[in-house]
Image (cartoon, rainbow, N blue to C red):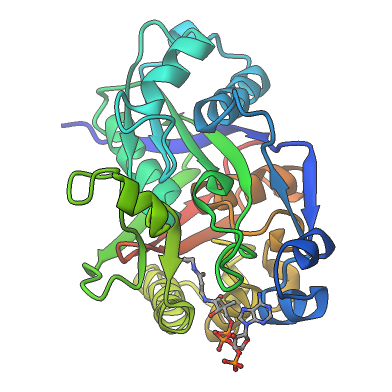
Length: 330
Ligand code: COA
């Protein structure tokens, strides 16, 4: 089979207007701006207030912007992959709703669940369709309405997350830029360190599950922090070594935005100075599948054609991974 190369040819985003600052959170729970900023790097996050809008809406808006930036009509899309842990419904897949909202009438569509690594797993999956020649244009979307599963009485977790979405268009590359390598890992989390316990087939919704607040995200923050710091740094180094990349060869680290301290530890292990690291956690918090495409969107005007980027993430599952790509937009 003639193996092709996939590259990102456009980026889009969506962020809700409402900014929930740390000071707003101070009114809801026993926390303070100083603690949140110093322990996480977050100052504010966006929250989707409109009760009629959710993950599909944000994903569709991000996708429409990516298509507009690429000058591609939605009818040309072959495949839509949407990464999320906050689907509009358990089924049908949120990607199906987006496919309809954007008018991608010739595309098939499915969701991918890999928590904070969802966007990376989805880019890897989408790239395989391009590389095999089975698809020419693939939309990969990371969208999460985390506020829908946050317990605002739990100060250890609710302060971390925000809502948002990003999308990229993958197309065939014919100039040597694009996705070069990808490494992914999984370690089933039997200790329930990062879970939403109810709402699935194991614990369907009951009066008790609601009363026990089991439909919210819960985590053992310290345990996840340790795992995430090790996982993201290890896999980033692994992909650098595998591709003989020295720190000076890497133009940008595009890290999942879970905690500024996790990002700093990863950059340090990679030997990268802070100027080479995309950070927007201060403005958006952790938007789960949205963080990496939102970084790409925010930095798109600073990226140079041919820049070496390392994308890295760690998330629930546990899932983690890294992608090495050469930026291919001129
Ligand atoms: N405001 C004020 N104090 C808080 C607080 C808050 N929002 N949340 C926790 N605290 C308190 C704790 O109760 C604890 O008090 P104690 O020492 O009296 O018991 C103290 O702050 C330290 O708590 P600890 O959990 O050790 O803090 P931490 O430095 O580990 O930071 C997290 C907590 C959640 C920010 C951090 O562990 C983290 O980022 N984990 C990873 C989470 C993550 O990324 N999850 C998504 C998947 S990628």
